[in-house]
Image (cartoon, rainbow, N blue to C red):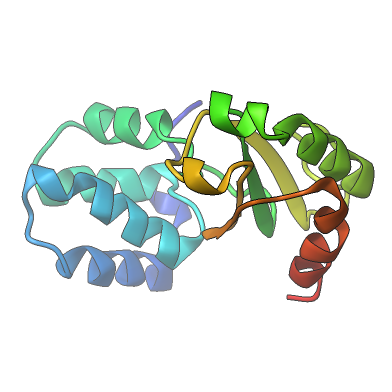
Length: 163
């Protein structure tokens, strides 16, 4: 995946990202919080914003890119309005994640890695988000939903359709 050029950002977007980054001390340990702030500001982390983060922290862009692309919670490109991340770790698998996946696929007509034709939902499978106590679990955008049962899926997704 190629890094987008800085020229593609609007002045408004660049200003918003700079403002978000200024909220942090420019030290390497703030890389992940900065990436979260960029994503919260733009809804994704485009290449030009990674360049801004790298410049702010005085680290190579490759280090920022490597961090952003490693973690599944970061979106490097615009995907869907709502991203569903379903955990498939052993605790979630054992407690019924496969049934939740079937219910999501039936409700939305998409599989993992796909986006609904209307662009409202995207579906991703992830290893773990550390909420094993409420397995099976999924995150929609940044909201955790646990102790799921397949029959809960249609009503849960309807809530996001209405947003």
